[in-house]
Image (cartoon, rainbow, N blue to C red):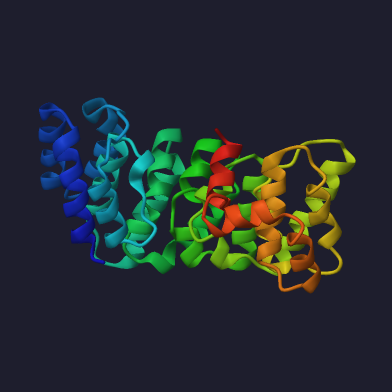
Length: 289
């Protein structure tokens, strides 16, 4: 999808959610940015004129976002993020290298709010393949708000991060108790390395008598084998229903005959899974409610 389509969509959002003063300021900036200096100044000042109100999106607008860019979900964006994304899309440049150089400068001096806007905007920026290094850097951040901007509800990591960086992002989400169900494309990029590390982490938590998010077993589900089946069975002894549901969901994705034999002992849970009443997304939402 072209940058113009993104601009049109984002402009429509601010027209309905920005006060007139903010709309006038943003329109003026977008029309007059001719240099790096003008961009940097406008990008920095945006919240003063737009405020930081949470976006309120209709179902139709959310559908439009997904149609523009599969996985694009601005539901948690604020109005200043929209304004800043429009400003980034208006960066004056002649070549991809020039655009990246300007972007690198703003990343190097950005504050928390600016970094959040920049990382969340990655899937909309031109020259997508040139932002991989930047996205991998975002995965390593210690700032939760910034990490969430790149890891959650953002299709860029799924589409472009190499496996090592992807696994690092997912595992960091587990370690920092971030909602895995909000990671776009999680199921599509599950892999054996990720499952193995997840199992090792589960053993560490159990040895320390610490709790463990039931979402972790979503990472293991397609790779259940004779070596880790007992770990999944352990969940079935839990007094917490959510753990039982996680174990059953994991087993439904296994090709092991033993897995199907175990599931046969829990017909009501299996029925709930078949009827769509027990899903990984629902488990995720319950875990963080």
